[in-house]
Image (cartoon, rainbow, N blue to C red; front, side, top):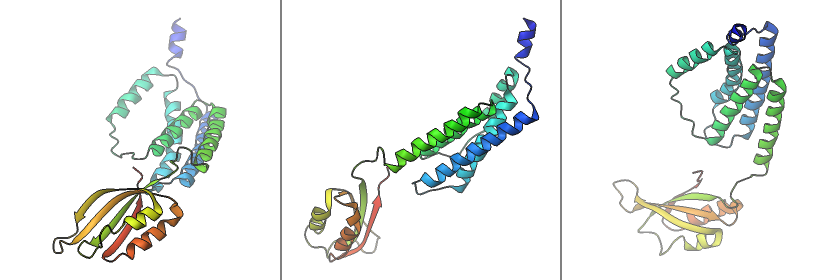
Length: 224
């Protein structure tokens, strides 16, 4: 009975196991990083985050090997990790998914479950690529933010109605404000719009720019 209890605190691992675990974690980590790089659709791509996915997978495998089945090490590691303060905010939900992806694969690699690590990486990557390829969960009609800067005194009555009627399924004004302190007539109009055909967005911008009094037109995809 005493021998069984002592085995809880004893963990042996060979150099071959260490090298094998780290190599599998590295290969899977590279695959995860490549998947992230080529599927990222946001505006704030980070090279450092991509590299961190590789390192996170390998480090997790090493941490698991360090802990082994030693309860004292596990509690000690929890205490040490509680001191660390992670101040980098993760804004994109897909980034959180990739972090958990790397952690999970690193865990599997660290306990020599190579088949789970490798095939799990392959299967999840294929599923994610399919989701991205077919725009799963993407709304059929995206909402855009249009900002129009114009001289209010020079604008005709109801100036944007015809252009919006021609190209938009829906439009809603959300903000009107003055631009600058010197010229009180310069106004910025903000609209949420849904286009009938997103390929014709340039035509909508061109038509609004031709309206007398309009100085500037900006169209943004609203990701929020």
